[in-house]
Length: 431
Image (cartoon, rainbow, N blue to C red; front, side):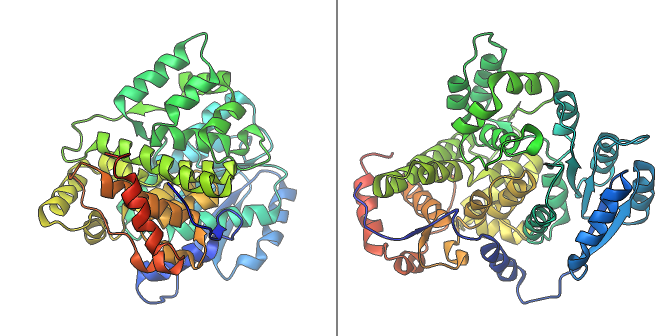
């Protein structure tokens, strides 16, 4: 596949403006947003003082409370509804794990973040299913603010409380049954290799997302953002993945008959091929393996919201899939009609909650509407959009009615003619 010379824009570009643009585009108009309610919990008085002083600049956007122990935090939670709880882990009396377990059970929509200097593996096991993100002390106030801004910004795009509850309460996502059995077998083997685990996980959006969540967590002290499953497995190591898999259900299997109209095999195949095609677009032109792996990972993850909806709301989503097929209406339009959001926004919210790198979140959120990225350069979301459209166009399956390629975007980035060339060249290779 020949590729033209063009400019590219991915993780080197700030992501927030693109997501902010999406909020106004989805919401229709510019209503004044309600303040985000955040509860900070820490038993160290000096830490609470630092948080109170450091967060003063956010009082215009955030309504903040501060608790000095778990008991006080539970009292506040009983009085108010919080959007985010940020807690230390090791506290006397009710500790962070117990507090977050209460929040998960009674307020599943609440974003749960640990800010702690203690990350023993046994504590990690206790936290994996309870927390969305783990930030390690010492953590700069700017980093903490950025984390809170990202998750609350993406959440603001989901006005359907059922979807917020569903997504925020997820501890894992179910995998393709065959791949789940493969990964389970690999993890039980005394000779399990990192490469075999990575090879299996790279074929599955759910496995990929969970490993990226773990590897991007400060639990394990990695200093850089992780964009690929291969790197995630290498950094975590086989023994840690085995330990977590034995202790908590970080992986599970999708029940094929749960959502009757959900073409799980087609979606998995499409995700892998979209990722591979996006990787080719970057690697052949830029010879940049880093960007190529970002494109592959974004392609694998771009439809993960469909899995969330099919697994969490099977009856409703089965009806949405049927309506889309019967009326020949793009699936995203029918999703918007029924849920006030699409699978792109649902998937992006989960990835934001799980602390994945912002370029991947933005690519998933914008893979139907790359112009919302606000750039005339070809960005990661644009590559996924193009690869997604090309792959759908060559797919022999007709179960899903998809949105057409954004012709205006192709013109904007100067790829309208090249897109037709790619489509012709790919015809004998895909299908």
